[in-house]
Length: 506
Image 1 (cartoon, rainbow, N blue to C red):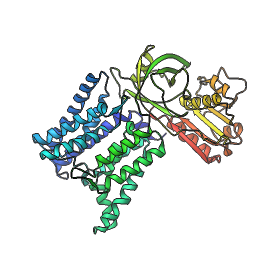
Image 2 (cartoon, one colour):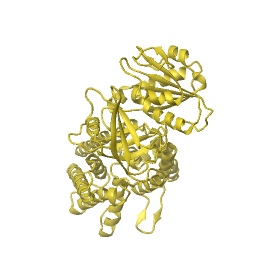
Image 3 (cartoon, rainbow, N blue to C red):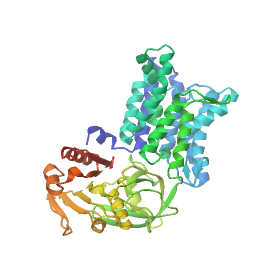
Image 4 (cartoon, rainbow, N blue to C red):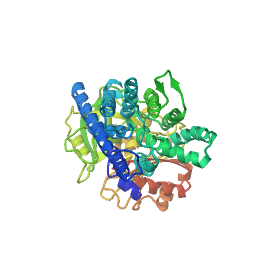
């Protein structure tokens, strides 16, 4: 696990976005004081205060009106983004437009929503509609003033941190590649040298900011990777292609993002899902499972994740939303379940989730992921799980057992000293061959399972327990460090197809 992963994994994605956006704003103020950013530093501060304050208050007001708890940090992020889009000016009209955008962004989560799931990125929606409303009265639409040469290094580093934390590199690169492929020929045709055209595109167009902070917004992304890349390509094209619809609606980054949001919504989990706690149980002494009954079917495929929102007081830096692999097959009669490791100092989220009584309400805010087994039943499989990384395999193996499909599967469990393998009942029922790798033999181990004494999976243990590993398609799930190490071991052993699923920040 790299030092960057360890550093970024200390906070939630939402907290990281809040911190990086704040850093961009602070840098803008400092550079405005020094001169490279041609803005009034006081106007930047006041605009940010109005945007964030309105967004938070409007969000809480909507929450009270719709009788639901809101995610305050999400409202803060919306306000920070809007402060970097609208031209900072100390006039009543300009501040009113910013406040209107923040208000409309908060409302969009509730008004433009289908069955409790919002459709649009609130910052993009607020900026788009506020610009349309303000134009007839002499107001200005979003100017995306964050796209200025002096701020590009700061924006690029901040966006890179978000992309690394969310693992959305392919998404962002697709967006940038399409946007630049369409924009650069136009700039060159206008007389710019190719290198100058590239510099202008990155410095003066809001491509980096839009890609890093808005395109990656998780609740408005489709669930599958190929769908996400398709949306990214479309949004990238619409961001730079000049077009207009009548005299009011014309090409803009916010319009491109809204169009992408609508497309993403059509292929995703098209409703928010309320889950009620059905039962708690300890799968092993260190792993807790929470089972839920749902008010509507949760659409997912075995191996995918679910994001849960558990509002609670004294929320720590890990936030009130977390992503878990689903530990049950689709259409399970008893609903769905997630599992997590309990440490000596659990996060406030894990404490709140563990304390929920039977019937306690949790909201599922998203479902997705591409950690899916191949459809071809003849593919030989090698599933390597580290600790709680077993959960996606539990869903997949239970689904295979239920369907009656016979597949050649080897499961390798990396078990820490003193721990017990989790979900042994599901693994035994699946018929898969199971290998346990640990520095010491677990106290309870099914007789048919193989054991290899080793600190972690290495070439010796792999060759001894899975001699045909090179012929198999491997799936690896666990902490980022475990996943990185295991992938290297498998590659050196000749395994050509390796899919990974890292539990970042756990």
